[in-house]
Image 1 (tube, helix red, strand yellow):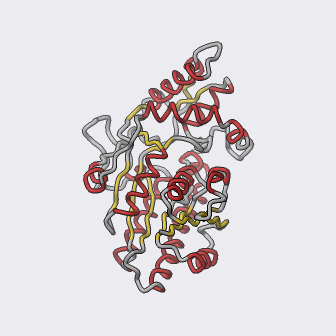
Image 2 (image 1 turned 90 degrees about the vertical axis):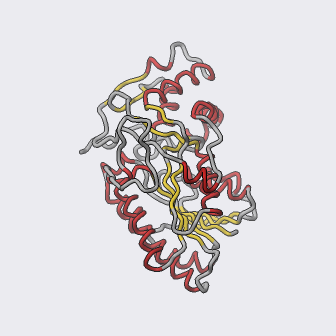
Length: 348
């Protein structure tokens, strides 16, 4: 199968690219190489004959038309997106342009290509989204997001992703475009750009800097190891039912404070310092509109497609910390990029 992956130099996208190549798929990686992308994320497959890179922006319709015509993919995995909630608070425009208009462009070019191929029955457009479109959950373990949970986005980021989800469903219902959708919980793991919680905590700890926790740290997330997520996405692409959505979770709910304390304990063991890293924990002003809890009910993907995550959050965090310890050259090169090391999302 030849797969066109958008955002394949990003965190989740690069994991998909690496796994797809390992599985024997041809991959066309379309990426604009914006601030959070890193071409080194796919260095391990760059010389593989199954891999092709296209430097292009999903906001550029002409470029998309050229890429579809040139490479004639069997499937699309659409991951390209602006994804950091704090940045969306400070600058929502980029999220509207990329996540909504960019997805519209991808749908239109995919539809035109699909029609030109005689409405191929094997073609698929897999749209990758987030559980944040569902809003916030109460602190009740029995209540989780399902594929039928009403949308209730609370940030410019989640609103833009919700809009893109609705567009994808509309293109399926109106034009018959063969689509599958997935909504994931919070990812973490190797190659995570250092603006999200896990890499920020790891790198701040190694530098002896404060470990910032929003509010009182009680916000709960379902943590999903990125390699598990990539495996799930390829499973949905290959076996998911057309027109159907699948919630992908790690089955690992933890509060932000619990997660940070776990990271500190792992760092204490793997890179001991002159005092426990947990002493660096610092509580900072909460994010505006910070959702209290996300949790995924993974019953559909488990029961219909036979997929479950392979690692616990403790195992995944240990692998992640070790990766950052072993790959200092990778993250050092990102320290001067815009916004890294700064508190964003307080302009509200």
